[in-house]
Image (cartoon, rainbow over the protein chains, first blue to last red):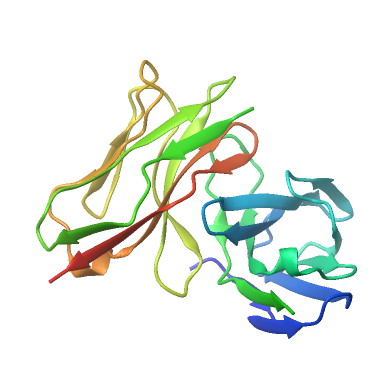
Length: 115
Length: 109
């Protein structure tokens, strides 16, 4: 199994509060990704990182920000959580040698409920 | 933009039945194609992949062939087991990974 951990694994929060999710990898992979999983939508990319301090937006980035200050850690922040951000969040990593073909490895997920 | 369409579930089968999950895609380039599987309570893991037309990916008895002429990558398994119960996602990678909605498969003993 790829060495990816996510914390917390479960979180309940209230609308309007800030929330930070953490992804930690031990593989020294260059690329890291944040996805959200919702019924009927599969997984949708929120943000990704292609190196320390190098990040870019995905298809559903509104309301989210990210930071990567170390190769092994990628943080996802909901500045002011809303009920529409209730979801399961997955972190993924890939080596970044050939982004067209290579496999992404996924973490176990964080289940977030915004009341 | 790129997109993936896969057959809607849920799919319920008996053990040893034949499984097919249809997947078609739309892409402007020449993507790689993937099937990921998600077992209950877990993250996604790669099941198989194909990187060019006519390639066949296979793993754990599952197979899928990259058909450029029909823009398809259907997943098949000849004899399913209870342990194959999971959600299956078709995905394409044309610089970024785009997923289908997922198909829930339940295999009954």
